[in-house]
Length: 155
Image (cartoon, rainbow, N blue to C red; front, top):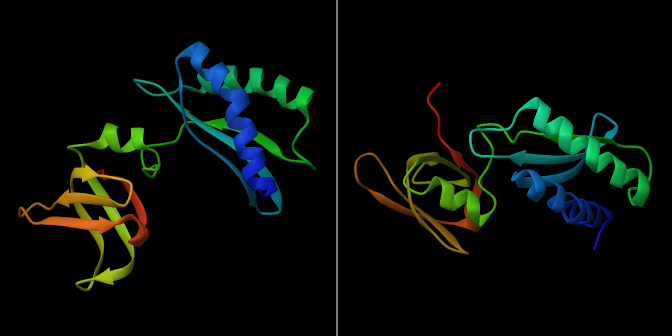
């Protein structure tokens, strides 16, 4: 296991009890380098949406653990954030939450000369995602062909 995966998994283990206490959901944890700076980020959510105060509350408690456990080498910035409206579907609960909703799928390679698809999420399993397009056409995508999948929004 690489350091990135180790840091993300340990952070998830430490932050989950904090989130359970406040009835928040962990959406994702990432350890990523941006512009020469390392970031350890936890994305959290709750019914009705997360607030800045919620993020601050979790960050304060998690910072105590990070200081005590000191498992991330080198300097980094720890952030707690809302995942935002355009977050990708990653976990099973993301798919469950979006069943029957309009989603956007972008593929790595064109399929029938298209790389962007919109439709209602009809089904998913470990290997594939099925949508129904506006005209009633049902499309099944192998997950290995999907570059991005998220809830679609009209802005």
